[in-house]
Length: 317
Ligand SMILES: [Zn+2]
Image 1: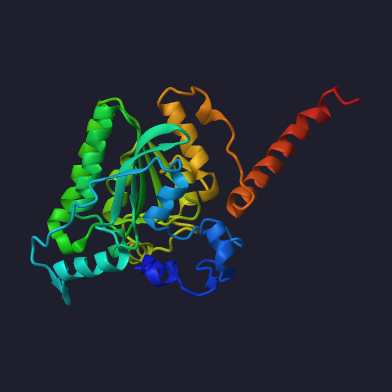
Image 2 (image 1 turned 90 degrees about the vertical axis):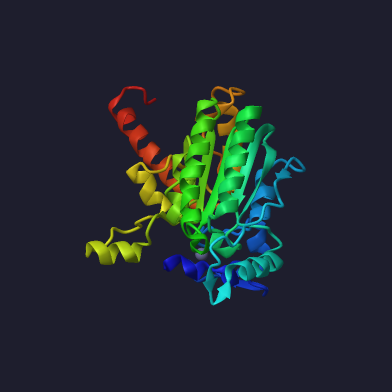
């Protein structure tokens, strides 16, 4: 599977320099971290540990974690070289996390919300009983407190070690989001690289607003599996954010440096605090190469169309 090459070794290298997984540029680690793990050369967005994501998204000191002690159980007695129970213990020790999602309440730009962030470092961000339960509990709490829900997805899909139990989380999270919707609360999904399998096929795709980071791989089955099944060459950029925006699968692509502002605006709009917030132009940060390039192209296109009528008209002095 293609996304396995973005494993934890490359996510969290220990040296002074980091090689960009997309363009191969050598990035100075300190600068790379200042840029929120975005490549300064090509704008590639690396996967982020959940706690780092929360820190850059929520207002300082506003995040209150919920249900941190929920842990998975090896109900099937699954054994994949290492028994699942043992694997869980090892991963917990290595990552310091109880499972592949961190949830809680927070404020983003002053708007209170319920926040859930997946952690790719924990068994590839796979969705099992804990991820499903935490999302369901978070939606229930949000409905009770009339809070909007923001979910950051980053996952290899359902957790195979839990078999059918992990697949049931797809229905469970969708059901929880439907109840939230019935309670009149809004949900926002942010798909980050990579969002695949059962997570794409459930909660990440059924929220009211679907955002994605630039260049994120978002899909159900991997591109290689699809290409061999349909025996056709796949179009360029297949299953990437930009391709999916063009096809109408997602609503907006938001660069990492603009994400907090954009979420703040959407949450303010969705909760009736600022009726026009969502329609104001996107802020463009200097360190977000992709956003800068896209804005420049849009500005050039706008200038080209604006010039035409001026030539025809008599306004020119
Ligand atoms: Zn790069």
